[in-house]
Length: 613
Figure 1 (tube, rainbow, N blue to C red):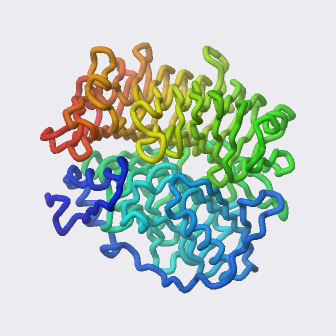
Figure 2: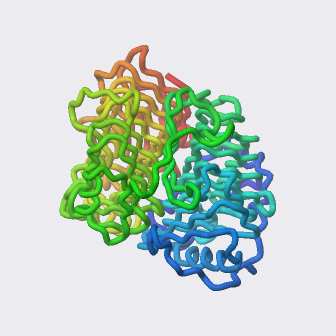
Figure 3: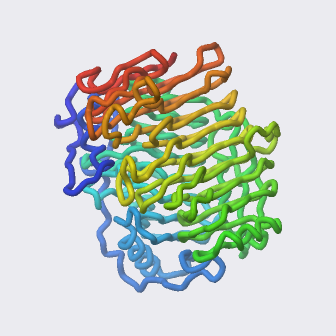
């Protein structure tokens, strides 16, 4: 097998001034020596530096500055009758502001009315949400690109977070539509008539992503390290590195782990696609897709997605500057909630108490709880959906950023579950903040559809004693299902699963980078804290595609005893697991319980795969 420095593998360069997470791309290069990585690169049809770039002559025109009268100042709605030059200038101006604004305050949503848009380059920066306003993706077709690049970071896409694209179709100029992202950058309900590379070419790495309800002619994962594709249609998939998971995907590659690292589950047992804003005639509405069982393929391949349309008049539309008191009053009065792009400092918990309430954020709407309050509390009622929000921990020290249900409740919701879609939580990075736990789920039957729960490892307000946070996700309810759990850098167990009959489809975790020494990284007498813990009294738990990574920057000998801990028994089923010592900095002794491993400096080249237990 060629080494990562050979002519068959990507060149890795460390840009100047990198902070902790930025070292990941270079460090990963020292450990990805598997045939899977070589397979990924060999199957890319892209040129060494990816698809050709369209000339920059599209910047003509004057930016459109008029705010949408309903959705507020941070939302721009385009129409096919508008000048393409003007549309392009508006997009360019936003991208110039947002390209490197990893912890900036800008929040944008760019919405496209149904129709065709010729020769348009939609380059998606931080905190930018691009979406079509049709009922189905093919109602909006962009000839050009709807893309994410990592040129700003010398090709390293491991920082390309907090952005999204949904509900549109793309006919790429040159046949390629790059989407080089890492966490918290979902692509949903998108039709790509061409090839979609998930990396920036031979310049660098990408580190995790999520795609759902989409149709793509060909995906090339390249150096993308891990990815979940759910309920989609693929003409072809090429490539793998550590952990590629496919659930309910027509055209998925054959199940094979670890070389290539493809984990394939035939169908999603129960799933509901994320609600989305659209135009019902000339009026805004939110479409709420129906729940599907044993689901395969997209929800729209055989016609419009089945579901319910709710007129926007039934929503309280929140704008930046609104307070939680007004939001809570509207929710208590029976309104749904649409949170438009912006940063919302809240001094009381947002309380979702009524069944079937939709809380939908657009443009990475961000909630910051102040004074130690919790950000959002969902009552133990049927059918609530929380979608498209970022919760940023404040300096007061919240107990829980998002709490779902009531502790100890016996109420079941199997016919109308609570859903979380694209819910992101951040502790540190954008500024000082702390929280004991990010998300706690008490309600039975809850469906979690893509979360990134992140204790910051770079940016402002980070450090072992600066942004304390114990756990990312705690699940107390029974029959809870998670599709796409990204949980990173917490100071104790990353995930604790106390409920029975839990199911996880894809899990990605990095242990904290910053324990100062082994004494600081101890669970009593045990070395380190386990990344994924199933409680001892659980009798049934199923999980597919789990990757746990260690990067101990203060001391490469800091050791974690095991990545996954479960009780013994026939009802416990784990499939496709991998542990990696990034750059061979840090040791993980075992993959699951006392099986598999180790991975660390000089140990199995820093990586250990375990197909199942």
